[in-house]
Length: 126
Image (tube, rainbow, N blue to C red):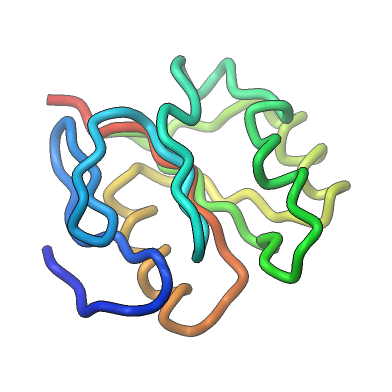
């Protein structure tokens, strides 16, 4: 899947072991906002994700700080600890959990609508 170009980061392709952002392929897990890509964002399973893993977003005090975080959990839809959802909500962010393919598609739609969104993406397994 290839998307049109934009001044914002767009997910240009995704598949087993690769996530493409602005036509650059990443083989590790990534955190994507409209203006930056954090490589090797998290190495682990969804059940172990904690608030501190979202540090790059929590530290952002600009108008770009996302209201919505899409968590793509690889091949399957796997919820992280429920405490994480409450902690992010206390920070003014809503965590939406889905498989990575769905998160990529949803991110692209929300960015094109100029929504305040970030995507935390775990690689799709091979």
